[in-house]
Length: 260
Image 1 (cartoon, rainbow, N blue to C red):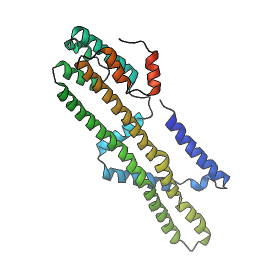
Image 2 (spheres, helix red, strand yellow; image 1 turned 30 degrees about the horizontal axis):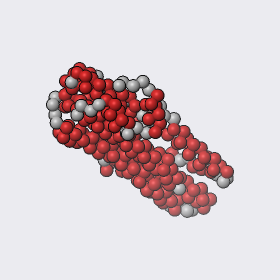
Image 3 (cartoon, rainbow, N blue to C red; image 1 turned 90 degrees about the horizontal axis):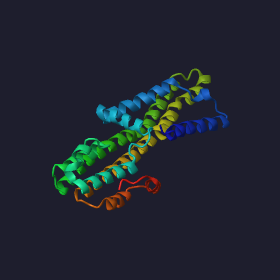
Image 4 (cartoon, helix red, strand yellow; image 1 turned 60 degrees about the vertical axis):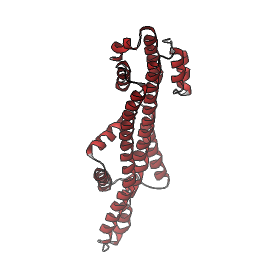
């Protein structure tokens, strides 16, 4: 579990509420069940109009995944591929058929099996890049769904504010209630802007970062399998794949036991 997103959301809400209190505001003045219902319900409805349910389900799953630890350990993947390179160099690429079944990732397994089955490097690269392209498209759609929510949310908040003002204007006979009614009307606007900028847009950004890491891992796997297929020296395989690692990952890799 990554605490960063939760800490960020809590910190943002905390400082906003503290600032409101320091300015003389009261918690009760920004609490509104109907306003929340309008903003949340209206935003969900608008996003459902734009995207199919399958995409929205995938977007929620992708957002939940950003709260978990990194999906790929690139250092371990490098060592795994170097081990494959050692086996292939010693016993031939057909010797990888058994170990390929236990590959750490389905993408890596598929690439290895294609190499074992005799696919040429161009076909292997083209096939796996098509798979990567589909993964990237789906990931971008998930991020765009949250970006859409972030775009609709403030506008729906304005709709809620206008509805509140209509209600106030229809009851001008009670002049004492006009001021509090106008203040309550703008609660929906606050909810819309806050939800967009504290939740929806940041989550879209996190999904994009997660997708970038996923594509880096995919490129590393593909480059590694192509190197194994070409019979490259395992040490050179490690050198090539190390270029995909961040500075911290390279330090981790240097301290880890080597497969070859």
